[in-house]
Length: 191
Image (cartoon, rainbow, N blue to C red):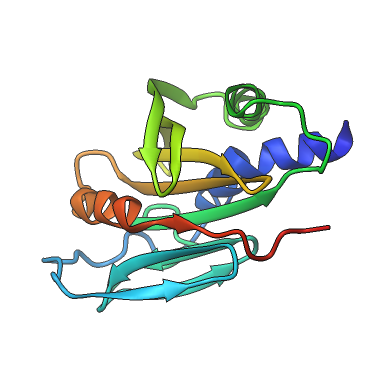
C-alpha cells in the first residue's frame, strides 16, 4: 500500500510540489516567440520533440523543458514537464483510480488546488485512454494554470504537464505539439 501511495503521489504531487517551491527571483523575463524548429529527445522510457531553442533539465524524477528565461525551480516560470512513474508489477489500479487518489492527496498539501476540467480517453503516443486534467492553484499571489495529460503503458504512468501563470501562457500550442510528438517506449522496464 505504501508503494502504491508513493506512485500515486508522483503523478500530481511531484509536479505541483516542484512548482510551489519559493524562489526569491520573482517572475522570469517574458519570452516573445516560439520557434518552429524542433529536436527529438530520446530517453529510455519515452521520446519527445522539443523546440530547438529550449533547454532540457533533469529535476528529480522529471524531465523539464524550458523556454528561454524560465527556470525549473521557479514556480511561476512557464514550463513543460514529463514524469514517468513505475507501477508495481502486481498493480490492479486503473489510471482513473491512481489519478483520483493522487488528486486527493495533493489537495491535502495544496487545499486551493482546483480541478477545472477532466477529459477521459485522451489519446497521445500509443495511449488511447489517457486522462487530461485542467487545474489551477495560487502560488505567490498568482494563479497558476496546469494542464496535465496522463496515461499508462508498459507498467508505467506518464504525466505530461504544462504550467504557467493563468492568462500569461505563451507556449500552449508548443505543449500540445510536444504531447503529439510524445512516444512511450518499452525500454527501461523495472524488474
